[in-house]
Length: 188
Image 1 (cartoon, one colour):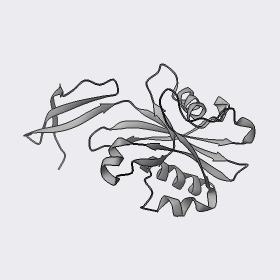
Image 2 (tube, one colour; image 1 turned 135 degrees about the vertical axis):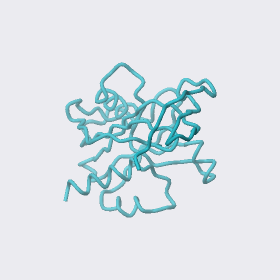
Image 3 (tube, helix red, strand yellow; image 1 turned 90 degrees about the horizontal axis):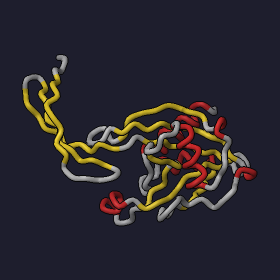
Image 4 (cartoon, one colour; image 1 turned 30 degrees about the horizontal axis):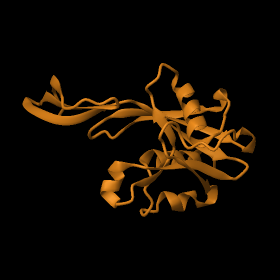
């Protein structure tokens, strides 16, 4: 049976520079429903492969929401950032690589893989995934982010990536796992 959805309204819950909690009221198959959502920025994420080290480059950082779940809060993630500037997605991806990891990758070597929705149960932000190959000559700083970000650059050997991906004791993201699966599927 096809759902019949009728949008009713949104109500803002709180005020934030990054998210906007809201309640969405709608009709589905003649039944009025409410769903709490968080309006978020879209994002970019970049899988980096360091060819000199035969390693993937990830970032490790503290995430308060994960801390509430595992009392640690540190996650291994792709280099990533919010789409909150009037720049192309590729330009934002380039900036995030430089800021977070310290590698200056030529813009035309930051290649789009695909895009997908994240946190679909409550947010539904669109993330655009990129890939870049880096080497030692591109390293221009230590990275670590900007302002008060505390980002650690992590190198993971390519031959350890599959085991890493499926280690439930390591807090990773679905984007990181998807990107690695893409890499191994397209680079067999």
